[in-house]
Image (cartoon, rainbow, N blue to C red; front, side, top):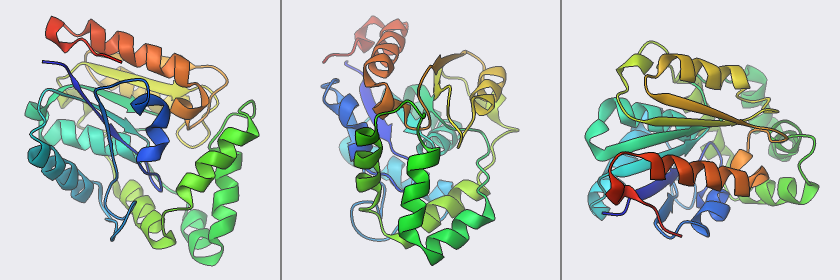
Length: 238
């Protein structure tokens, strides 16, 4: 059986965040969390976990390598703790075991949403990332309503599995950008130190959107990881 690669986007994102991965891996599935394409969002990571489980059940997905970015990483962590039987391995991208959000962010979403988008260009990328990539990413995020992004950040702010990481018994790859200001490298180092059977890869000249900033390096690291899993039937294709 070929591995199911299930990509989970972060706060304010959607499946388009993974465009460089869905084009590369033919067995990639990138979902839209509720409210990020249509409808209403959620306000807790647990609610998003239940949505992802329902999606997996409806599609008959098992033996999954779940790849989560930022809030999607939080969802992946909680999914691994709650429903490990669905998973073959997990990949945590620019995320942490706890994701506190500064109060000013909530205030700014209500006051001036366009300014929040401009702040994303400043803080979510390495200074070396081309402006075209920054602009395209922000255009993706603008598709999401302010109230959905607000709920996403609420979910992040409530999230904390720092005391449970040692219960994760799955091969785990951790990827982060060296220049990430939103979830600094120390967050990923904490995950590496506390999740058994985990590996950390830090990419130079990349920030919080590492899969968009360094797609070739990201894809190669992910491909090597999945191909290293013990079951030879887990080979991925592209």
